[in-house]
Length: 262
Length: 354
Image (cartoon, rainbow over all chains, first blue to last red; front, side, top):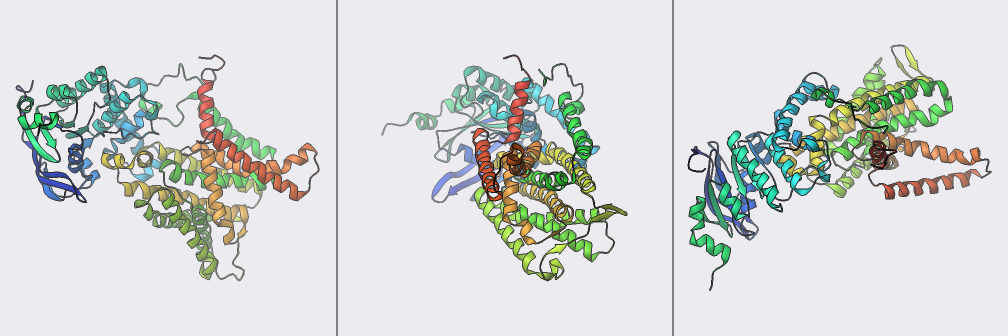
């Protein structure tokens, strides 16, 4: 699978990124590239800085040194909504859905940046505002169809089981039609069947929409099967970067996961 | 059984996104509009208009405005009375300083002034949340109370500090009888309720609810928190400002700063909480509960033929009213609107168990 697909130019480059909170160094001198259309997995033991890395990419955290180059533009600081407007979407480790809203509304929210009807039109809900709502509803229905959640579209997400919530959250991220999709443990807490579904969705998204995907995952089977490339973090440092096969044989990675005899 | 949407198929997204997609809801709202515009005017007397319906309509408008802010956007505000005061005093000043100004335009302008003040006092919400924001808006309440009672310009230097306005007249049509006032308030309320409903089911409403439910995720999706919060403060203050202007001009006719003190803020916040946060219907139910119930309790001993002293009646009224509030919040913390939603879900199947 990985061999036949051609991967493009780097869409995102991180150059010697460091991030610290007070005295705690979350990330130390991390450099990595994400190429167009690839699925990159970030793995590492707990507290290795994986989520912090995603947070740096979409502007929640500002690195204390180093720079991020996204689609040719280098920047050191960026607000999350700016990242969103440039085509970066993400899901969260602990589901961050809007609990009081329905599935439909949650996914519609993902299209906020693409909607432009003025305040006045929204007040009277005719003309532009209504046309826009219907146009985006059609797009959202395509996503609902793709994720096979038609039957729950009017259910408030707070009532859904965990696996479906994860799926809705993926739908919300997809609604923005991102170029770069960041998935923070998309399969945490799922059973085998749900994991298989989710893997299929991730591969389809990558395949059909050409979306570049960076994902954090703990299930090594999934990681090795899905990803084109794997980056390994440990204590905020990068200790491995390569194809799944290379990582499997990397002694430093094995030591980090299994521990070393002293 | 009575609320089943079975057989009501939608063939377009437009139909599915209508305000009331279920036929029974459309019938219900039609009945309510008939009651409001036809039955009540035919059946009630001047006292009922003055004591119940007009205050209810205006308070429902204010509660609607506050619900947009607290219920939909999740920003607690204790400054409602102050924003109402801004609306009332602004309308008064536009009215005396621009001769011949149409009062309806004065009310709209007053809403605009309340909007600006609301945005100004909404700025702290960008940094603080919850209880702390409530305290910050409480500061707005005290500050604005002080402004209107101390700075003479706003009251046009009336020696007593109270303001009196003659009946509102639009294009030579005088809103002087309670019935006419009732129609004016009802029309404005229906108009604003439609606007509120349109806003909350569109993009702005979703960005408010997203900010309320999970602000970090909202920002990552591309919703700017500043825009979402301040727009909620703006729209909410506009509603409340217009409600304040109506309260002064239509209901009271003459008022002093005390009419918009912190008790007013609390009572409107109670309406929103008891009615149901994040529900348009809730604003109406809450306003009805808070404005109508005390009057009913007050009249109750007479209807039952029990002889009680007036002091006793008012004490009992307070006690029962307080007990009812506690009871409703204990039974259903999400308000009366939630009870109605549960009833609807039950009615789908009734009388069958499943």
